[in-house]
Length: 202
Image: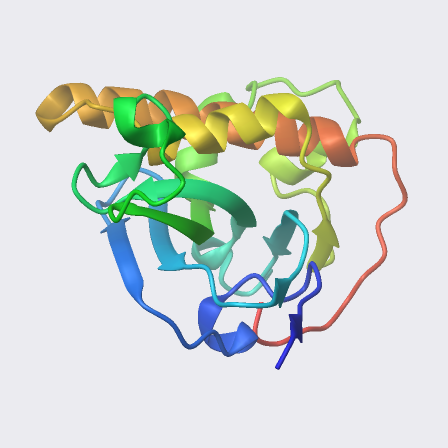
């Protein structure tokens, strides 16, 4: 049966994806971006497009819970079971019958707390742009909105999925890439009207 998903379906449990989980990574370190990456083998007859969404949570009575969340779903990446990353550098990539190669569906989620975003907000804020309002949580209404995946966003997501760093260098790398994702996503919604949605699962 064909499965057609939308940009709102950016969580594997909500999509109802039933296939092999081939890779999983997450981090809940205090003071840093909380992220979750899940890569699944692409189901047969899967019909969808790459999608992104920004969720803005504003709780005036509990400002410590204010946060920004980015969600992405990307498809069509070729995953190597052996090397646990993209297989395009592999010499066997040209082989159509490579047994290690599998097409994937990737779900990525990044949560930026208000405490984390404070470091990017100037002490004297004169800028009234949407991005500044979101970073400083001056925008008074929670919302979720689609984010267009530009070339820069796609490249950053691909880099996050296929890096070779570990230990402290990995922490530095992930911190830098997640900040770039936030920058590109804020650029994508800047100067655009915000339509408020109430998808509770987001």
